[in-house]
Length: 243
Image 1 (tube, rainbow, N blue to C red):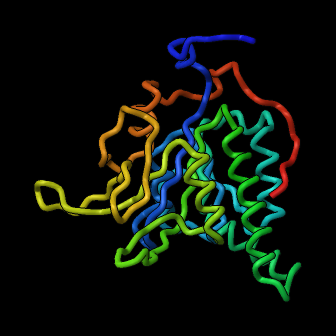
Image 2 (cartoon, rainbow, N blue to C red; image 1 turned 30 degrees about the horizontal axis):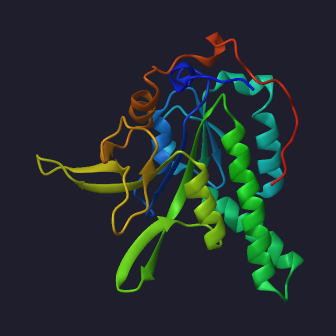
């Protein structure tokens, strides 16, 4: 058995895995503009908010296209990117649920169960992409817990939501408020409260951080974003992954 001290493991080539959820229109998709060397996998059917920005994008309008994209992420061609942004895991959950409802038209509980199982496998797959930072964007869902209102990422079934929050190291609520000058700003809530699910396994973040992926990843890793073409460590297989 190889025994290592945790201080010796800090510099391993492990990308940061982040979930960001927020209400409609708050600007989740535009977070792609804050991270260089990123590829946006768009399941939402259009990205008009990015029309004036230079962001590489791949369309994944169904599960077949997503399977192909996930296989492509392990190819040498994908080595030009250091960050994968999925917009959104909620929409992908809708695709999968629609498929499972057709497979089990008389048993919606079975459709939910199969959807959750497939989403959990997908989330686990993204966690294994060690060379990449992975950012999963998600819709926000509001629900009542006794006399309290709570917000979490929106996925079909509680099991998939719990797996998402457990598996990824970072989970942030994208919110907005006013700064000291009274200007409306967006920010990441990185710590949980009575209403919002959030977490960070890093001790480098404040409970509220500017909504900037570059700054967040730099704070966590202590590394500036560099051109992946200069990084000799790449994965090179064209294996496709199921969803």
